[in-house]
Each structure stands twice: as C-alpha cells, then as structure tokens.
Amino acid sequence: MDPTAGLSRLLRTVAPHAWFLEDEVTGLAAFVGPGSVCVDVGAEFGLYTWTLAGLVGPRGHVHAVEPQPGPAAFVEATRRLLAAGRVTVHRAALGAVAGNGALSLPRRGPLPVHGRAFLTTGAVGLGSNAEFARHDEVPVAVTTLDDLVAGAGLERLDLVKVDIEGAEATLLAGSATTLERFRPVLMLELEDRHLARFGATVADVVDELTGLDYLPRTWRGRWAPRRVDDGCRNVLFLPVEREADLVRSEAAPVPTHGT
Image (cartoon, rainbow, N blue to C red; front, top):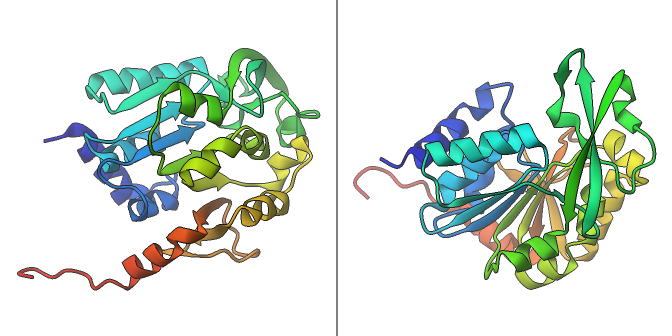
C-alpha cells in the first residue's frame, strides 16, 4: 500500500470534521489526479502537500515551498519517512522578484506562530500581526514562481495553492509567465486584514485574475461561483477554459456497484 496515498485519503476524509484542516481539502480531487504537478506555496507543516501528493500519484509531483526552517524541516522529514520521491521541498519565499528578504515571525508567549509569518518585502508595518507583542526576523531567500517553475524544468503545472499571509498579490507579480504558459488552477487564501499591509484588497486580486480569464469559486460542498458575502477566505480561480470540464464532472452520474 502506498503510504502517501493513504495519508492523503485520511486527510480528505477527516477535513470536514477537523479544526486544523480546511474543508477545501476535500475538493482538490476535482482538479488534481494521477500525473498532475502542483506547487504548494506556504506549505507550513504539509497538510496540503500530503493531500496533493496522494492525488498526483507516483507519476506526478508536488513542490512544497516553505521558507521557515522548522516547518520546512518537518515536511522534509516526513518526505523521507514516507519515501515520497514525488515531493520536493523548497526552502524559500516567493515574491515579485528574486533576492534576499526576511520573514516577520510572530510569537505568542514563547511559541512561534508559524501560520502568521509573512515576507516583509513590500509590506508596510505589521498590519494584522500587530496583535502579537513579539516578532522575530528570519532571513530567507526569495524567488519567484516563474523562476521556481523554470528552475525545476516543469513541463506542466496543474494547481498552485498559495497561503502567504497577504503577499498573494506580490506573488502574482512574479508569476506572469507561468500563468500564461500553464494556466494552472489557483487556490489563494485571501483576507483583507492581511492584504492591507501590502496595499492590496481581496477585490484587487479577484479583479486582476478575472482580467486574466480566471473564474473565482469557493467550496460549499462543491466548487460554486464565488459570492462576495460567502465568508470563504480560500478562493479558487479556475481558468475559463476549464469551466466546462468542471461542469461536466459535477453533472456526471455517480458510479454504482456492478456498473
């Protein structure tokens, strides 16, 4: 039995019932299958990485991008434990241009809050992280999605998941070639409170991607057209040319035993 596939199935099964998993995990199979190639930006401890790794199978690949030393080491250790050659860990941050940068890592008491770390390049102040009394500065290498894709020699790219605490618009600025060439499905965590420190809003990002012929959807038991008031922070952007494929998959009859 493939342990990576088993872990992926477990995560997708428990996602609707576990506070530490996002419901959207259960909907990834609509766009990711055997042989797919995905990039998980802001992988943290790998919950999306391992969900995707099981879906892509041995012929696919997942590139987990995580600049924080602890979480990146955890994903790499898990990769080795599972002998998951289909996963590559990149310890870097993604932004608009390549170079050197720093993460602002907040602490709650003695504990780092890894899920709220953000790349300070282009940010003004702490923004939503002002609630934390202490912040560590973590030096990181910065690259772009375009450079990462080129450096990895990718010939296909099916899905990019991004959770980088407000720097999503910055990442898009370094992704033009990738979006034009591969037209991947995008899943971005978008919250005005985080985007504000980069001078952006959710509406700005949605408008930019809509202008590139991406259709915003959110998970409500299925990938439904996004409503501004639906309260979903994760927004999936579907290339317009794949809309018909999704509609057909949703309309397909569910196989029964013996058919």
